[in-house]
Length: 250
Image 1 (cartoon, rainbow, N blue to C red):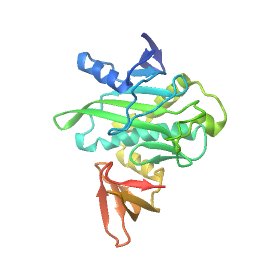
Image 2: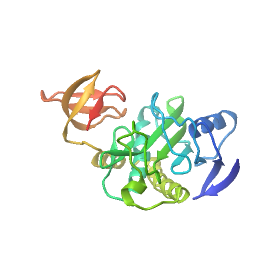
Image 3: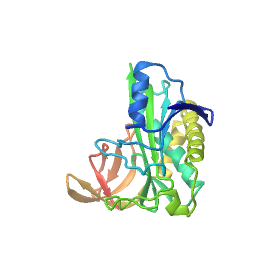
Image 4: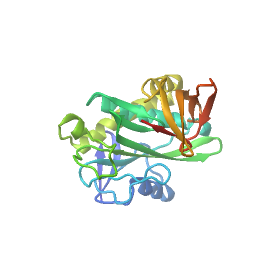
C-alpha cells in the first residue's frame, strides 16, 4: 500500500482490496480520517452495490474508489440530498466527455440506457444529524467487453472510442462532486433537487414498472424528501415507492 495525494484529496492507493467501502468503513472504525480522503484501487475483488448487488469491474480497466465525507450539517432525514449531489457530480463529469448521460433513480448513471457508473453511500448518524459518509463509486472507463449477463453495461471507451486515464478521471470526478457537495453545505438544496430531476431518466414520461413481479404504467412526477420515487398512475393517484420496491422496465 502506498499513500499519495490526488486533486487536493488525501489518497490511500491499494494494490488490491475486497471493497474500497469496506476498507473506508474499517478505517473510520479505528481512526479519524480527514474529510475528502479517497480510497482508490484498480483491483477490487468483492465490489458492492446497493442491497445485495455486486459491482463487477475488470482489473486495471476501470475506476473503483470511495470518498469519506462528514456532512454533519445535514439532517439524517435529508440524507438523499447527499445522494443527489454525488449523482450530479458524476453526471457533470460524464456530460463533459460524451452525450446522452442521465441519472437513473436512485443513483445510477446511464448513457443511452446503458449503465456506466454506480454509487453506494453508507451513512452513519449521530443524534438527528449525519455524522460520516462513505461514498463508493464505480465507473466503467476503459472496459471494452462485458460478461454476457451485463448486457446493459457500457464504458467511456465504448461511448467515445478513446482510452482514458483512470487516475485523471478520478481527479475530475472529485472536482465535480465537491462542487455539488459545497452547494449542499451552503444550503442550496432546492437547486440540487431541481437539477437532479431535470436530468432524471424517465422524468415526466409514462413508463412500465414492476412491483412484486406485476407490471403497471405510471409517470415519474418527482422524488420525495426521503428519496422515494413518486409515481402517478392512470387513475391520477400519486404514490411513493422506496428503493427496491419497484423496478423500471426500459
